[in-house]
Length: 307
Image 1 (cartoon, helix red, strand yellow):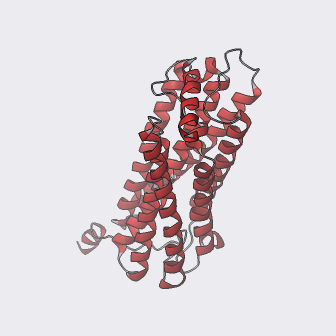
Image 2: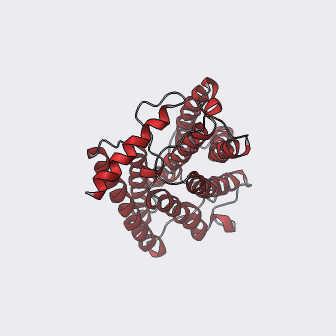
Image 3: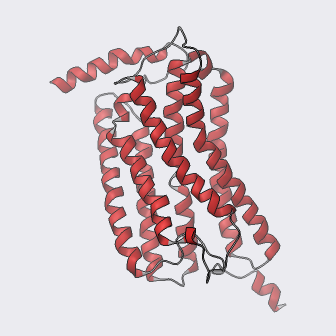
């Protein structure tokens, strides 16, 4: 009976090594504080861009997604600081782990949308095809499903000592992180389709700047996200090690570099390249030819800026 009660108890601290390990006051709190400042700068910048554009009737929702990503990361780092001060609080550890995996999904979605706009502009007959349009919606639903799977598996595995249940939770987590890795590669696939297929006679222009610049921005941002997702997937697929003998890839240095350093680079690439101007399209675009309506709107924005 005591074993049964124990199995239904919890939460239990993990006995296996995890990326970043157990946070400590030094060096985790100072490092987290620096990243909080950087993410706050990103959040303020993207919210400012969104509000300024909105007042000019230049709606660009992706700036809000980047704002949400930045705020989620601030929460992640605050939780890690709290965990460093209360190392034996398993519930804080669970929350911190969930937020580490959750926030970056918004950056993955932004890259996918930007690459989709390039494909629709250069290859309208493919980019606007109903199969791809409905398929992208399914992919977004699966992103939410992957997040729910990770959260559920993390919580369930923390509240049981049954090894079979924990093994099943690990399988669920591996399926989720593998899907996320595949999703981060899709913007590159769309870019390749856009540039490698014969030029379409219906090719359109949208936003500011040359198409080559837009392609370079999405390619760089997507490559960084693939590196983030690939590293996380590789760590999760690696054999489990005891918490007392963690491998090199679970070190704090790898945790901060392959999470927050690369994410700051993604945010910097997308924000300071002014995707709100380069990738703006008319509201309600739903078919080939709709992007060309953005040309006049962009000219009006330029005239306002000149004033």
